[in-house]
Image 1: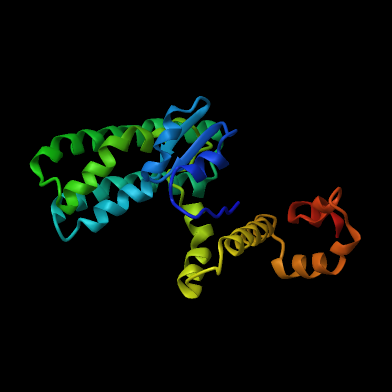
Image 2 (image 1 turned 90 degrees about the horizontal axis):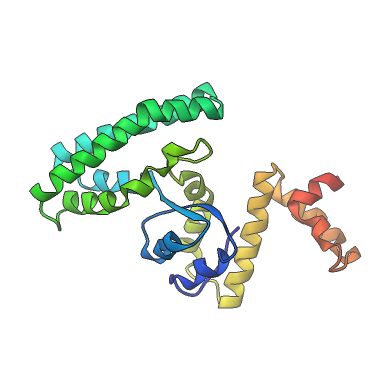
Length: 228
């Protein structure tokens, strides 16, 4: 689901997630911190965002940055193995416990030892300062086989939106941006259900006048496939 808000404050996430319970994976943006106190929500962070900070620090402190990245590489190698072997949930949890948890602990201890030795405002200092306070939430994925190490699937899903935003620069109005978010949501749902968005839109526009508000939901992508 795509949602448009005028600003980047916590009001938007708070409104969307007001009734949500479960795991919530985000980057380290401060607007999400409030969810850490919400009953029924387990806040977790994205390992890709932490790794990116160390990639940005390579020119500043190559030795430390490369060492940290080698540890991240081990964590991601475990996840690739899980995917390649198509492991079941019990096997995923066991593999993460045996191989990922020791690496996660080692990297946390290493950052704790190294942070006093670097300049806080340097790229390597900022990389550690970003990751270390969030490490427990970055490590949550290892405790549940249904969780991902990062939110790259979401990042990949919204990449066309980010590219489009750079190209068309503006939506025209808040109302237009909200309508655009609804269209993005419908097209993303088509993709999830392996439906050609063009085929869906062409069919729906041709016969939506036959529906009322009571049954218009039958034309939503996840229902439309059943009507073919």
